[in-house]
Image (tube, rainbow, N blue to C red; front, side, top):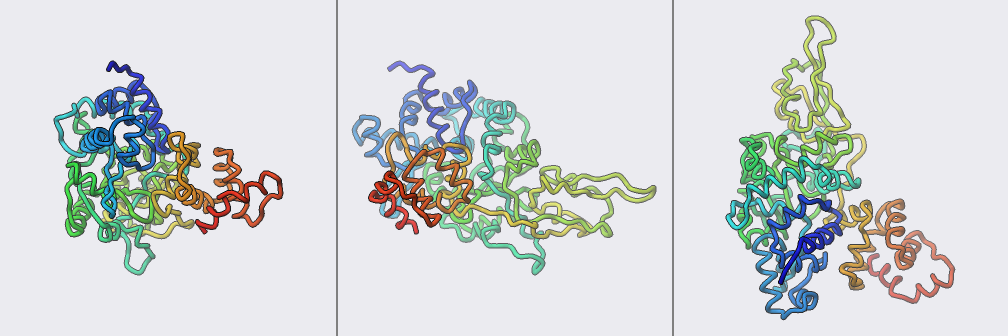
Length: 446
């Protein structure tokens, strides 16, 4: 069967249905050609965004279930799909977004089935030079994909409160599964001669995401003890812990260097727009102890600390913090030889989405793609899935509810938001809608 670039364009359009989109450019199509065969691109472009089984794939692709499962397993083995085994033993598949997703998976191990050097060069051009992708990923909405964990040794005991979900140590120790893989960012930069001496096999995947990556050879299973050892190693290299921006079931913790990490590079370029969610802490400098050594300025991963010139002849330079771009990671605190820096809670607490579903819905609302989650692959979601999704919407602030309603143009959603507000418009359309499953859906999620 003859294929053209159209199959990769179709796949690009499918990927752009995710809240984490990949702007369609020639570089994207070159990347997809390296990762997907034309047949795989055709198949991947047709699958739903939500998890599906082999039976569903067979119907979409119009092939036997055996043939569908063979294609699914082949793509999962190469990190193009994720295969998720439920407690019941049933296997589901999901097309991951480009990032966090199959872009990273392609470089989480050394492999010979693809040209990783060419792929790395294309990634570098697409992400670090063109910048449309990085702007769309990090700046398209207020809800960030990732967040910063504070360096825990920088928190003085009893000086301030830190919640469990804000601790990388707690996330690691409470995870149901842990795996370690190669840092995608540093591996990519090594192929374009821009990497550093920070360790590469140090980035963690956790909970439900860990098992598929271990099963398909993209990561190595470890226990919590080794996970904590890697966290201490990251502290020794002054790496920033960046994790999924959720409170529960965190799927990844990256240990990021300032020179290779795409998130930290974006934070330096677009800092005031906060492409990464900050911690709930902010450093404060005790000028009486500061000797003007400048270590804090040199070590800050986003250049939030600068040394100001001496105010008087004979006095020392002093540190000035740009609070608008500070991540609150605490690396400056830990490295100050004079203990002249301490962490304090931010005046306004940072709100972290409860889980991946909640964060995904918020991102979809902000980026105008909520309808893609509800009407997936031109098929209405099940009532249970719809109820869960709309339940999250109903917990959003009113302005985001209004944005969601406008995108969907749905009387169903309008009715649910009306019920949430304690009133129900007395119109013929709304009275008719009250006899539909809408009210039952609202009752189900409340």
